[in-house]
Length: 479
Ligand code: 5AD
Ligand code: SF4
Image (cartoon, rainbow, N blue to C red; front, top):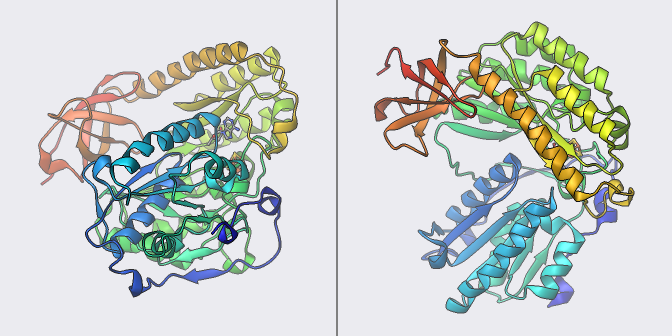
Protein backbone atom coordinates (compact mmCIF):
# COMPACT_ATOMS: atom_id res chain seq x y z
CA UNK A 1 0.00 0.00 0.00
CA UNK A 2 3.03 2.25 0.21
CA UNK A 3 2.22 3.80 -3.17
CA UNK A 4 -0.64 5.59 -1.41
CA UNK A 5 1.64 7.28 1.06
CA UNK A 6 1.75 11.06 0.94
CA UNK A 7 4.98 12.15 2.56
CA UNK A 8 6.13 15.64 3.55
CA UNK A 9 8.72 17.55 1.54
CA UNK A 10 10.57 20.37 3.19
CA UNK A 11 11.32 22.00 -0.17
CA UNK A 12 7.59 22.39 -0.77
CA UNK A 13 6.93 23.45 2.81
CA UNK A 14 9.48 26.23 2.49
CA UNK A 15 7.73 27.82 -0.51
CA UNK A 16 5.36 30.74 -0.20
CA UNK A 17 3.12 31.44 -3.17
CA UNK A 18 0.68 34.26 -3.82
CA UNK A 19 -2.11 31.78 -4.39
CA UNK A 20 -5.17 32.94 -2.45
CA UNK A 21 -5.90 30.93 0.67
CA UNK A 22 -8.87 28.61 0.36
CA UNK A 23 -11.52 28.67 3.06
CA UNK A 24 -13.12 25.29 3.62
CA UNK A 25 -16.44 25.08 5.40
CA UNK A 26 -16.20 21.72 7.13
CA UNK A 27 -19.23 19.48 6.96
CA UNK A 28 -19.12 16.20 8.85
CA UNK A 29 -19.76 13.24 6.58
CA UNK A 30 -22.47 11.17 8.27
CA UNK A 31 -21.05 7.98 6.78
CA UNK A 32 -18.41 8.15 9.54
CA UNK A 33 -20.93 8.73 12.33
CA UNK A 34 -20.83 5.14 13.57
CA UNK A 35 -17.18 4.31 12.98
CA UNK A 36 -16.21 4.91 16.58
CA UNK A 37 -19.22 3.36 18.26
CA UNK A 38 -18.19 1.27 21.25
CA UNK A 39 -14.57 2.43 20.84
CA UNK A 40 -12.52 4.71 23.07
CA UNK A 41 -9.67 7.17 22.49
CA UNK A 42 -6.84 8.89 24.30
CA UNK A 43 -5.14 11.98 22.91
CA UNK A 44 -1.77 12.98 24.28
CA UNK A 45 -0.86 16.56 23.44
CA UNK A 46 2.65 17.97 23.32
CA UNK A 47 3.79 21.51 22.59
CA UNK A 48 2.11 24.88 22.31
CA UNK A 49 -1.44 26.19 22.56
CA UNK A 50 -1.94 25.69 18.82
CA UNK A 51 -1.57 21.97 19.43
CA UNK A 52 -3.92 22.11 22.41
CA UNK A 53 -6.50 23.84 20.21
CA UNK A 54 -5.97 21.24 17.47
CA UNK A 55 -6.47 18.42 19.96
CA UNK A 56 -9.81 19.95 20.98
CA UNK A 57 -10.86 19.77 17.33
CA UNK A 58 -9.68 16.16 17.11
CA UNK A 59 -11.85 15.38 20.14
CA UNK A 60 -14.76 17.13 18.40
CA UNK A 61 -14.29 14.94 15.33
CA UNK A 62 -13.88 11.73 17.34
CA UNK A 63 -17.01 12.37 19.38
CA UNK A 64 -18.94 13.06 16.17
CA UNK A 65 -17.80 9.61 15.06
CA UNK A 66 -19.10 7.99 18.23
CA UNK A 67 -15.78 7.51 20.03
CA UNK A 68 -15.69 8.06 23.79
CA UNK A 69 -12.75 9.04 25.93
CA UNK A 70 -10.92 6.05 27.45
CA UNK A 71 -10.51 5.93 31.21
CA UNK A 72 -6.90 4.80 30.90
CA UNK A 73 -4.40 4.41 28.10
CA UNK A 74 -4.33 0.59 28.37
CA UNK A 75 -8.07 0.50 27.72
CA UNK A 76 -8.02 2.74 24.64
CA UNK A 77 -8.83 1.51 21.14
CA UNK A 78 -7.27 4.60 19.57
CA UNK A 79 -4.23 6.49 20.80
CA UNK A 80 -3.32 9.77 19.12
CA UNK A 81 -0.09 11.59 19.93
CA UNK A 82 -0.29 15.23 18.85
CA UNK A 83 3.38 16.12 18.55
CA UNK A 84 5.66 19.17 18.77
CA UNK A 85 8.74 19.67 16.59
CA UNK A 86 10.16 22.87 18.05
CA UNK A 87 12.98 21.23 20.00
CA UNK A 88 14.72 17.88 19.97
CA UNK A 89 13.79 17.15 23.60
CA UNK A 90 10.09 17.25 22.71
CA UNK A 91 10.71 14.87 19.82
CA UNK A 92 12.75 12.42 21.91
CA UNK A 93 9.88 12.24 24.38
CA UNK A 94 7.50 11.31 21.58
CA UNK A 95 9.81 8.58 20.27
CA UNK A 96 10.04 7.17 23.80
CA UNK A 97 6.26 7.23 23.99
CA UNK A 98 5.85 5.55 20.59
CA UNK A 99 8.18 2.78 21.77
CA UNK A 100 6.15 2.27 24.93
CA UNK A 101 2.92 1.96 22.93
CA UNK A 102 4.15 -1.26 21.35
CA UNK A 103 3.16 -3.26 24.41
CA UNK A 104 -0.45 -2.04 24.20
CA UNK A 105 -0.58 -3.16 20.59
CA UNK A 106 0.52 -6.63 21.68
CA UNK A 107 -2.29 -6.72 24.24
CA UNK A 108 -4.85 -5.38 21.78
CA UNK A 109 -4.01 -6.01 18.10
CA UNK A 110 -6.97 -3.84 17.05
CA UNK A 111 -5.47 -0.81 18.78
CA UNK A 112 -5.00 2.08 16.34
CA UNK A 113 -1.95 4.26 16.96
CA UNK A 114 -1.88 7.66 15.25
CA UNK A 115 0.92 10.24 15.23
CA UNK A 116 -0.19 13.74 14.27
CA UNK A 117 0.80 17.39 14.61
CA UNK A 118 4.13 19.03 13.80
CA UNK A 119 6.63 16.14 13.84
CA UNK A 120 5.07 14.32 10.86
CA UNK A 121 5.53 17.51 8.83
CA UNK A 122 9.27 16.77 8.93
CA UNK A 123 10.66 14.34 6.36
CA UNK A 124 12.95 12.70 8.94
CA UNK A 125 10.06 11.80 11.23
CA UNK A 126 8.09 9.98 8.58
CA UNK A 127 11.16 8.08 7.39
CA UNK A 128 12.00 7.06 10.95
CA UNK A 129 8.45 5.89 11.68
CA UNK A 130 8.38 3.90 8.44
CA UNK A 131 11.73 2.31 9.20
CA UNK A 132 11.48 1.67 12.91
CA UNK A 133 7.92 1.87 14.17
CA UNK A 134 5.79 -0.56 12.23
CA UNK A 135 3.13 -0.49 14.93
CA UNK A 136 2.11 3.09 14.05
CA UNK A 137 -1.04 2.95 11.90
CA UNK A 138 -1.61 6.59 10.96
CA UNK A 139 0.77 9.45 10.39
CA UNK A 140 -0.99 12.73 9.68
CA UNK A 141 0.06 16.38 9.83
CA UNK A 142 -1.15 19.84 10.74
CA UNK A 143 -2.86 20.57 7.41
CA UNK A 144 -5.17 17.56 7.22
CA UNK A 145 -6.54 17.25 10.76
CA UNK A 146 -10.03 17.70 9.34
CA UNK A 147 -9.55 14.48 7.33
CA UNK A 148 -9.17 12.38 10.48
CA UNK A 149 -12.55 10.59 10.00
CA UNK A 150 -11.54 9.37 6.54
CA UNK A 151 -8.04 8.39 7.65
CA UNK A 152 -9.49 6.39 10.54
CA UNK A 153 -11.95 4.72 8.18
CA UNK A 154 -9.09 3.61 5.95
CA UNK A 155 -7.32 2.02 8.92
CA UNK A 156 -10.28 0.52 10.78
CA UNK A 157 -12.40 -0.65 7.83
CA UNK A 158 -9.98 -0.92 4.90
CA UNK A 159 -7.14 -2.22 7.09
CA UNK A 160 -4.64 0.12 5.45
CA UNK A 161 -1.64 1.83 6.96
CA UNK A 162 -2.06 5.56 6.35
CA UNK A 163 0.71 8.09 5.83
CA UNK A 164 -0.82 11.39 4.77
CA UNK A 165 1.11 14.59 5.34
CA UNK A 166 0.52 17.60 3.10
CA UNK A 167 3.38 20.05 2.66
CA UNK A 168 1.33 22.64 0.79
CA UNK A 169 0.63 25.84 2.57
CA UNK A 170 -2.71 24.81 4.01
CA UNK A 171 -6.24 26.11 3.98
CA UNK A 172 -8.42 27.70 6.60
CA UNK A 173 -10.95 25.17 7.79
CA UNK A 174 -13.99 26.72 9.45
CA UNK A 175 -16.75 24.96 11.33
CA UNK A 176 -14.76 22.06 12.73
CA UNK A 177 -16.51 20.53 15.72
CA UNK A 178 -14.61 21.43 18.89
CA UNK A 179 -14.88 20.00 22.36
CA UNK A 180 -13.03 22.26 24.73
CA UNK A 181 -11.14 20.98 27.73
CA UNK A 182 -11.67 24.00 29.94
CA UNK A 183 -15.18 25.26 30.74
CA UNK A 184 -14.17 28.85 31.39
CA UNK A 185 -11.19 29.53 29.16
CA UNK A 186 -11.13 28.95 25.41
CA UNK A 187 -8.49 29.06 22.69
CA UNK A 188 -9.50 30.92 19.55
CA UNK A 189 -7.29 30.67 16.47
CA UNK A 190 -7.13 33.96 14.65
CA UNK A 191 -4.49 32.90 12.17
CA UNK A 192 -2.44 29.90 11.14
CA UNK A 193 1.14 29.38 10.00
CA UNK A 194 4.10 31.71 10.10
CA UNK A 195 6.07 33.62 7.46
CA UNK A 196 8.81 34.95 9.72
CA UNK A 197 11.38 32.23 9.10
CA UNK A 198 13.46 32.89 12.18
CA UNK A 199 16.54 30.89 11.25
CA UNK A 200 16.34 28.43 14.16
CA UNK A 201 12.63 27.68 13.90
CA UNK A 202 10.81 24.77 12.26
CA UNK A 203 7.31 26.25 12.63
CA UNK A 204 7.11 27.99 9.20
CA UNK A 205 7.71 24.53 7.68
CA UNK A 206 5.39 22.54 9.93
CA UNK A 207 2.49 25.00 10.01
CA UNK A 208 2.77 26.54 6.58
CA UNK A 209 2.06 29.95 5.21
CA UNK A 210 0.61 32.70 7.35
CA UNK A 211 -3.15 32.89 6.83
CA UNK A 212 -5.64 34.93 8.80
CA UNK A 213 -9.20 33.92 9.55
CA UNK A 214 -11.98 36.23 8.50
CA UNK A 215 -12.67 38.74 11.31
CA UNK A 216 -16.41 37.99 11.13
CA UNK A 217 -15.72 34.30 11.84
CA UNK A 218 -13.59 35.24 14.86
CA UNK A 219 -16.17 37.71 16.18
CA UNK A 220 -18.85 35.05 15.78
CA UNK A 221 -16.82 32.42 17.61
CA UNK A 222 -15.99 34.74 20.53
CA UNK A 223 -19.61 35.94 20.74
CA UNK A 224 -20.80 32.34 20.94
CA UNK A 225 -18.28 31.56 23.65
CA UNK A 226 -19.45 34.59 25.62
CA UNK A 227 -23.06 33.46 25.25
CA UNK A 228 -22.08 29.98 26.47
CA UNK A 229 -20.64 31.49 29.64
CA UNK A 230 -16.95 31.37 28.85
CA UNK A 231 -15.02 33.90 30.91
CA UNK A 232 -11.83 34.17 28.90
CA UNK A 233 -10.55 33.72 25.37
CA UNK A 234 -6.94 33.53 24.26
CA UNK A 235 -6.44 34.53 20.65
CA UNK A 236 -3.87 32.30 19.03
CA UNK A 237 -1.35 32.85 16.26
CA UNK A 238 2.41 32.40 15.84
CA UNK A 239 2.60 36.15 15.34
CA UNK A 240 -0.75 37.72 16.15
CA UNK A 241 0.57 41.21 15.43
CA UNK A 242 0.71 40.43 11.73
CA UNK A 243 -2.94 39.32 11.76
CA UNK A 244 -4.75 40.41 8.60
CA UNK A 245 -1.64 41.67 6.83
CA UNK A 246 -1.52 38.56 4.61
CA UNK A 247 -4.91 39.36 3.10
CA UNK A 248 -5.79 43.03 2.57
CA UNK A 249 -9.30 42.00 1.54
CA UNK A 250 -10.06 41.16 5.16
CA UNK A 251 -9.79 44.89 5.85
CA UNK A 252 -8.80 44.24 9.44
CA UNK A 253 -5.47 44.21 11.25
CA UNK A 254 -4.76 43.13 14.83
CA UNK A 255 -5.53 46.46 16.57
CA UNK A 256 -8.77 46.64 14.61
CA UNK A 257 -9.65 43.02 15.46
CA UNK A 258 -9.11 43.73 19.16
CA UNK A 259 -11.27 46.83 18.90
CA UNK A 260 -14.08 44.71 17.48
CA UNK A 261 -13.65 41.85 19.96
CA UNK A 262 -13.47 44.21 22.90
CA UNK A 263 -17.14 45.05 22.46
CA UNK A 264 -18.18 41.45 23.02
CA UNK A 265 -19.28 40.84 26.62
CA UNK A 266 -16.54 38.34 27.45
CA UNK A 267 -14.74 39.27 30.67
CA UNK A 268 -11.19 38.53 29.55
CA UNK A 269 -9.33 38.63 26.25
CA UNK A 270 -5.73 37.50 25.97
CA UNK A 271 -3.53 36.76 22.99
CA UNK A 272 -0.31 34.98 22.14
CA UNK A 273 2.29 35.22 20.60
CA UNK A 274 3.46 38.71 19.67
CA UNK A 275 6.47 39.36 17.50
CA UNK A 276 8.19 42.56 18.66
CA UNK A 277 8.78 43.79 15.12
CA UNK A 278 5.06 44.23 14.40
CA UNK A 279 4.03 45.71 17.75
CA UNK A 280 2.62 49.06 16.64
CA UNK A 281 1.74 52.17 18.65
CA UNK A 282 -1.85 51.68 17.51
CA UNK A 283 -1.83 48.25 19.13
CA UNK A 284 -0.42 49.69 22.37
CA UNK A 285 -3.12 52.38 22.33
CA UNK A 286 -5.87 49.80 21.92
CA UNK A 287 -4.45 47.64 24.72
CA UNK A 288 -4.16 50.71 26.93
CA UNK A 289 -7.94 51.12 26.79
CA UNK A 290 -8.02 48.10 29.15
CA UNK A 291 -11.45 46.74 30.04
CA UNK A 292 -11.53 43.12 28.94
CA UNK A 293 -8.11 43.41 27.27
CA UNK A 294 -5.79 41.94 29.87
CA UNK A 295 -2.58 43.73 30.93
CA UNK A 296 -0.34 40.82 30.09
CA UNK A 297 1.90 40.52 27.04
CA UNK A 298 4.11 37.62 26.05
CA UNK A 299 6.79 39.22 23.92
CA UNK A 300 9.52 36.75 22.89
CA UNK A 301 12.88 38.47 22.54
CA UNK A 302 15.04 35.33 21.95
CA UNK A 303 18.35 37.17 22.50
CA UNK A 304 19.73 40.51 23.65
CA UNK A 305 22.68 40.50 21.26
CA UNK A 306 22.36 42.45 18.03
CA UNK A 307 24.57 40.08 16.05
CA UNK A 308 22.65 37.02 17.29
CA UNK A 309 19.30 38.71 16.63
CA UNK A 310 20.50 39.37 13.10
CA UNK A 311 21.64 35.77 12.66
CA UNK A 312 18.25 34.68 13.98
CA UNK A 313 16.49 36.91 11.41
CA UNK A 314 14.45 38.60 14.13
CA UNK A 315 14.41 42.01 12.40
CA UNK A 316 14.89 44.20 15.50
CA UNK A 317 17.83 45.27 17.64
CA UNK A 318 18.27 45.16 21.39
CA UNK A 319 17.75 48.94 21.52
CA UNK A 320 14.53 48.70 19.50
CA UNK A 321 13.20 45.99 21.78
CA UNK A 322 13.99 47.99 24.91
CA UNK A 323 12.38 51.04 23.33
CA UNK A 324 9.24 48.99 22.63
CA UNK A 325 9.17 47.79 26.25
CA UNK A 326 9.40 51.42 27.36
CA UNK A 327 6.58 52.50 25.06
CA UNK A 328 4.37 49.67 26.32
CA UNK A 329 5.09 50.38 29.98
CA UNK A 330 4.53 54.11 29.57
CA UNK A 331 1.04 53.59 28.17
CA UNK A 332 0.12 50.47 30.17
CA UNK A 333 1.90 50.93 33.53
CA UNK A 334 0.21 47.93 35.15
CA UNK A 335 1.33 45.52 32.39
CA UNK A 336 3.19 42.26 33.04
CA UNK A 337 5.66 41.20 30.39
CA UNK A 338 7.01 37.72 29.82
CA UNK A 339 9.33 36.44 27.11
CA UNK A 340 11.07 33.53 25.40
CA UNK A 341 14.85 33.31 25.28
CA UNK A 342 17.18 30.92 23.46
CA UNK A 343 20.73 30.50 24.78
CA UNK A 344 23.58 28.87 22.92
CA UNK A 345 22.52 29.87 19.42
CA UNK A 346 25.38 28.96 17.01
CA UNK A 347 28.25 31.41 17.51
CA UNK A 348 26.89 32.93 20.73
CA UNK A 349 29.84 34.41 22.65
CA UNK A 350 30.01 35.25 26.33
CA UNK A 351 29.57 38.91 25.36
CA UNK A 352 26.42 38.04 23.36
CA UNK A 353 25.06 36.20 26.37
CA UNK A 354 25.90 39.11 28.68
CA UNK A 355 23.88 41.33 26.34
CA UNK A 356 20.91 39.00 26.84
CA UNK A 357 21.34 39.14 30.64
CA UNK A 358 21.49 42.94 30.43
CA UNK A 359 18.31 43.07 28.35
CA UNK A 360 16.51 40.81 30.82
CA UNK A 361 17.51 43.06 33.70
CA UNK A 362 16.39 46.19 31.89
CA UNK A 363 13.08 44.79 30.62
CA UNK A 364 11.69 43.78 34.00
CA UNK A 365 10.22 40.51 32.70
CA UNK A 366 7.91 38.80 35.17
CA UNK A 367 8.57 35.41 33.64
CA UNK A 368 10.34 33.75 30.76
CA UNK A 369 10.50 30.45 28.95
CA UNK A 370 14.19 29.76 28.46
CA UNK A 371 15.65 27.19 26.10
CA UNK A 372 18.96 25.83 24.94
CA UNK A 373 19.16 26.13 21.16
CA UNK A 374 18.12 22.94 19.44
CA UNK A 375 19.25 22.25 15.88
CA UNK A 376 16.31 21.69 13.52
CA UNK A 377 17.07 19.91 10.25
CA UNK A 378 16.00 21.95 7.24
CA UNK A 379 16.24 25.36 8.94
CA UNK A 380 18.99 27.83 7.94
CA UNK A 381 20.63 27.77 11.39
CA UNK A 382 21.17 24.01 11.11
CA UNK A 383 24.01 24.88 8.71
CA UNK A 384 25.60 27.51 11.01
CA UNK A 385 28.79 26.32 12.71
CA UNK A 386 27.88 25.59 16.31
CA UNK A 387 31.04 25.76 18.38
CA UNK A 388 29.56 26.50 21.80
CA UNK A 389 30.15 23.46 24.05
CA UNK A 390 27.02 22.00 25.64
CA UNK A 391 28.41 22.60 29.14
CA UNK A 392 28.75 26.31 28.38
CA UNK A 393 25.18 26.44 27.08
CA UNK A 394 23.94 24.67 30.19
CA UNK A 395 25.83 27.09 32.43
CA UNK A 396 24.34 30.08 30.57
CA UNK A 397 20.87 28.65 30.92
CA UNK A 398 21.37 28.26 34.69
CA UNK A 399 22.61 31.84 35.05
CA UNK A 400 19.75 33.15 32.96
CA UNK A 401 17.18 31.16 34.92
CA UNK A 402 18.42 32.59 38.24
CA UNK A 403 17.88 36.09 36.88
CA UNK A 404 14.52 35.19 35.36
CA UNK A 405 13.36 33.69 38.67
CA UNK A 406 14.09 36.96 40.43
CA UNK A 407 11.76 38.57 37.89
CA UNK A 408 9.01 36.05 38.69
CA UNK A 409 9.37 36.82 42.40
CA UNK A 410 9.37 40.60 41.91
CA UNK A 411 6.40 40.35 39.58
CA UNK A 412 4.43 38.60 42.30
CA UNK A 413 5.64 40.83 45.11
CA UNK A 414 4.20 43.94 43.52
CA UNK A 415 0.69 42.64 44.19
CA UNK A 416 1.20 42.17 47.93
CA UNK A 417 -1.65 43.84 49.89
CA UNK A 418 -3.50 44.61 46.63
CA UNK A 419 -6.98 43.37 45.82
CA UNK A 420 -6.94 41.50 42.50
CA UNK A 421 -9.65 39.87 40.40
CA UNK A 422 -9.17 36.11 40.16
CA UNK A 423 -10.89 33.90 37.62
CA UNK A 424 -11.36 30.79 39.76
CA UNK A 425 -10.62 27.66 37.76
CA UNK A 426 -10.86 24.93 40.35
CA UNK A 427 -9.03 23.44 43.27
CA UNK A 428 -5.32 23.90 43.62
CA UNK A 429 -3.19 21.04 42.26
CA UNK A 430 -1.37 20.69 45.55
CA UNK A 431 -4.16 21.26 48.08
CA UNK A 432 -7.66 20.03 47.47
CA UNK A 433 -9.15 22.51 49.97
CA UNK A 434 -7.65 25.54 48.27
CA UNK A 435 -9.09 27.26 45.18
CA UNK A 436 -6.86 28.57 42.46
CA UNK A 437 -7.08 30.86 39.48
CA UNK A 438 -5.41 33.65 37.57
CA UNK A 439 -5.36 37.46 37.79
CA UNK A 440 -5.58 39.83 34.82
CA UNK A 441 -1.75 39.90 34.83
CA UNK A 442 -1.78 36.10 34.61
CA UNK A 443 -0.54 35.51 38.16
CA UNK A 444 -1.54 32.27 39.83
CA UNK A 445 -3.43 32.84 43.10
CA UNK A 446 -4.32 30.20 45.71
CA UNK A 447 -6.87 30.96 48.41
CA UNK A 448 -9.41 29.17 50.61
CA UNK A 449 -13.00 29.35 49.42
CA UNK A 450 -16.14 27.40 48.59
CA UNK A 451 -16.65 25.36 45.42
CA UNK A 452 -19.41 27.77 44.38
CA UNK A 453 -16.75 30.32 43.36
CA UNK A 454 -15.37 28.08 40.60
CA UNK A 455 -15.95 29.70 37.21
CA UNK A 456 -16.40 33.17 38.69
CA UNK A 457 -14.20 36.22 38.88
CA UNK A 458 -13.76 37.18 42.53
CA UNK A 459 -11.77 39.88 44.31
CA UNK A 460 -8.95 38.45 46.41
CA UNK A 461 -6.71 40.34 48.80
CA UNK A 462 -3.11 39.22 48.32
CA UNK A 463 -1.44 38.34 51.61
CA UNK A 464 1.49 36.25 50.42
CA UNK A 465 3.80 36.53 47.43
CA UNK A 466 5.92 33.49 46.60
CA UNK A 467 8.12 32.99 43.54
CA UNK A 468 5.58 31.02 41.53
CA UNK A 469 2.26 32.00 43.07
CA UNK A 470 0.30 34.37 45.27
CA UNK A 471 -1.81 33.56 48.31
CA UNK A 472 -4.73 35.52 49.69
CA UNK A 473 -8.32 35.65 50.86
CA UNK A 474 -11.60 36.51 49.18
CA UNK A 475 -12.77 39.90 50.35
CA UNK A 476 -16.28 39.70 49.03
CA UNK A 477 -17.91 36.49 47.96
CA UNK A 478 -20.23 36.52 44.98
CA UNK A 479 -23.18 34.22 44.70
N1 5AD B 1 15.71 25.72 19.71
C1 5AD B 1 15.36 26.21 20.91
N2 5AD B 1 14.25 26.93 21.14
C2 5AD B 1 13.46 27.18 20.06
N3 5AD B 1 12.32 27.87 19.97
C3 5AD B 1 11.89 27.81 18.69
N4 5AD B 1 12.76 27.11 17.96
C4 5AD B 1 13.74 26.71 18.79
C5 5AD B 1 14.93 25.96 18.62
N5 5AD B 1 15.29 25.47 17.43
C6 5AD B 1 11.70 28.57 21.10
C7 5AD B 1 11.60 30.07 20.83
C8 5AD B 1 10.12 30.25 20.61
C9 5AD B 1 9.54 29.18 21.49
C10 5AD B 1 8.14 28.79 21.20
O1 5AD B 1 10.40 28.09 21.30
O2 5AD B 1 12.02 30.77 21.98
O3 5AD B 1 9.67 31.55 20.96
FE1 SF4 C 1 9.13 30.41 14.80
FE2 SF4 C 1 9.88 32.98 14.51
FE3 SF4 C 1 7.53 32.13 13.47
FE4 SF4 C 1 7.80 32.35 16.13
S1 SF4 C 1 7.91 34.06 14.65
S2 SF4 C 1 6.89 30.61 15.01
S3 SF4 C 1 9.96 31.77 16.44
S4 SF4 C 1 9.59 31.48 12.86
